[in-house]
Length: 124
Image (cartoon, rainbow, N blue to C red; front, side, top):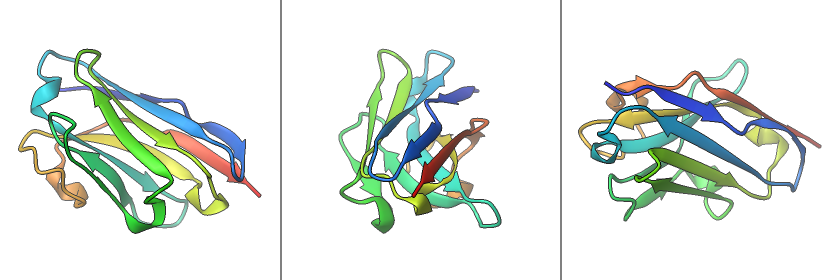
């Protein structure tokens, strides 16, 4: 089992940047593919980005391609989401998630473990 804790959210203006972190407990972090999802108020949770166990492959939703970068440090049991050129439509609660099967899937149902979320608010 793994526990996930996100941090780094906040209030920024459009065009600014934020870096989210997700710290995982346990010694098996490198066995999990990791994903970031977000949920805006009144909307369904949606895929943002995913990264393979080794960090060698990453995947992005179309709305964030070219602006967001997912990365991981297996030595620190942490996955990151660097968010640049933020837009008001990026406002949401951001969640990290872990998938033991290593699928790096955009489907939230493939992830077994979830963090509590961190709020990102982008003002115009």
